[in-house]
Image (tube, rainbow, N blue to C red; front, side, top):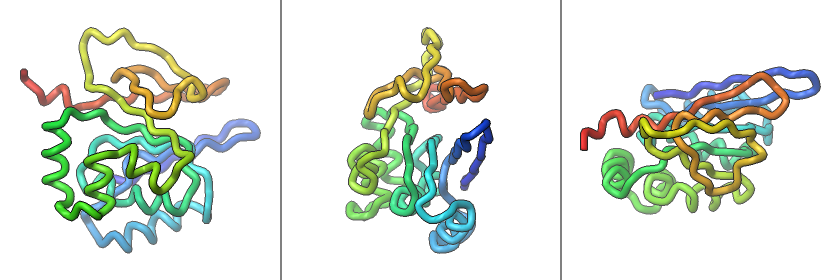
Length: 171
């Protein structure tokens, strides 16, 4: 599983990022306790980057959304076949957050944190012309190309999300 956090310190600003938020090495209760030691109650998390929807990468997302202020969640955009396969690998309980986030990530996220902006990262395409964005240019529900740079305005920080799924698709 994976749960990584980074704090970027700029003059008069701290920028907090989470890369994936899950585990398979312990209980969800242990993961939530670990998350709670990483952040102050109701602390702001600027961005959560979700690499893919396997349980060990997203089973802490619900806790983060419920207990912290999350500005953006970047998630891979999947086709219906990929969505079905991810659902079969996560949870068959349709009422669980794991099932909801896999089947309809925007609705699942918004049901917990209405103000969080959800940004899709489309599958990688060799023909993409990479674009640079600042976070304030991205609107809720928009889709960006894999490989596009996301930049924190006025600071020397950027991230290049890539939806890895295309690399495994031979058709």
